[in-house]
Amino acid sequence: MYQKKAGVFMADWWDADGRRHRKQFANSAAAREHEHRETALAHAERASREMKLAARTGGVKRSSPKVVNGTTEPAKGKLGVMIPGMGAVATTFVAGVEAIRKGLAKPIGSLTQMGTVRLGKRTDGRSPKVKEFVPLAGLDDLVFTGWDIFEDNMYDAASNAGVLDQRLLDQLKPFLSSVTPRPAVFDHNYVKKIDGPNVKKGKSKMDLAEQLRDDIREFRKSSGASRLITMWCGSTESYIEPTEAHQSVKAFEKALRENDEMIAPSMIYAYASLMEGVPFANGAPNLTVDLPVMLELSRKNEAPICGKDFKTGQTLMKTVLAPAFKARLLGLSGWYSTNILGNRDGEVLDDPGSFKTKEESKLGVLEHILQPGLYPELYGNIFHKVRINYYPPRGDNKEGWDNIDIFGWLGYPMQIKVDFLCRDSILAAPIVLDLVLFLDLAQRSSELKSLGIQEWLSFYFKSPMTVPGLYPEHDLFIQLMKLKNTLRHLKGEELITHLGLEYYD
Ligand SMILES: NC(=O)c1ccc[n+]([C@@H]2O[C@H](COP(=O)([O-])OP(=O)(O)OC[C@H]3O[C@@H](n4cnc5c(N)ncnc54)[C@H](O)[C@@H]3O)[C@@H](O)[C@H]2O)c1
Image (cartoon, rainbow, N blue to C red; front, side, top):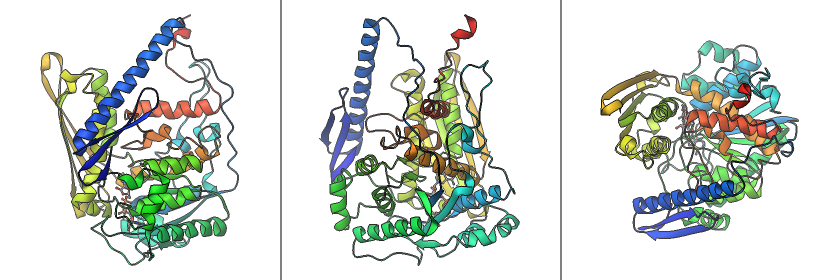
């Protein structure tokens, strides 16, 4: 769904034959509803055709192990990580990588570093580490740069963020001080609560995009990196809906030249990166790469994209608990989620425009997991509320409360309370590391590099991107299965379906 102009909203969907359709509406809710309904119909139509085909060909097709799944180039040379937004998450990630490289700490929470992947049968005893199974860049090969509206280097920014212990930061000081921010592309209208001096000036948004492209080329040269990744860790921008300017590369470039106000700074970074053939991951809930123009560029330039909004604390819990309710057919009448946090992200989210962007990202989760259309008696009438309150004394140590009203056998009500005293950036940093390494892998894989959206990385996001017309998969365990099966598939290993009948033959 996108807004064509004031008061004109376009539903935008693909039918069962892969044909694109658009229909005009006077308000966004009607357009969104129409799009959802048509998309669901298209899925149902496709599923029914597949079932008919399976019946004609004598039953369900058994998957046979594939051998040819394209090629994956080895991870040779340095991998340059470029980060717009050198705040709490970015500095906790970069300082963490350096601490791990120096043997001062462990990469806890990182699937690429500590995770394993089971291969073959349960009785085979083959479970290599992910990083030994697929060719990922090593931590020693990572080099960093970033952009920020403030002039602090990574050491000062990490000290200000107050996430990591100062004694640890002091041990990393020479390295962290060497990462200094490049001037940012910034628009105060998109992030109302902050302002800073380290900002680029340009005649037009296209001019700013060209300056970012120069930065990227300069970093590629000066760092000696053979490959690059851009990872958006900047603030959450004000809520906007897609417009015509975002529908194609041609329209977007015209809008850049004309300084269209619907082009947010994060989109300019994304455009510059994709034009330079650099993959882009979006850690915030902004639209950024979740737009037809970016999908077009990503596919054309073989620069994979993924997003959006790191799935760290409360939403991580939601995508674990909600699938459990659905699995046991327990009903849900209400889910009230509230948070207090006192970091700069919390301050930015205190602005209604930025909060709305975050709220949309957090709200979508339950509907997609619980499927009220399929289970109207259980999930047809849920009151779902999300609040975020800026509360400075807590800093980065967020507290997220959930009150969940569920009902069971014969409709008897029950309640669950979750009180998660988490550390926002400690949860986000390993996600950033995994995304950097997996996006780089995707670009080296002949199978993945021209797909555009890397849906197999949904595991890491609150609001996972999918190809238009496909609903996102939010259940954490389905997401993990999808991720690991993608790795197995790339290596020509049998996919794990958990059928397991062969053990009883
Ligand atoms: N920490 C988490 O658990 C978590 C989870 C999900 C999403 N996120 C998102 O990740 C992002 C980073 O979070 P954080 O806690 O590090 O926030 P932060 O406020 O500490 O850091 C964001 C940084 O981005 C900079 N910035 C803003 N606009 C910019 C621009 N146009 N160009 C360059 N720099 C810009 C700010 O100056 C700031 O230093 C936020 O959007 C947040 O919503 C964080």
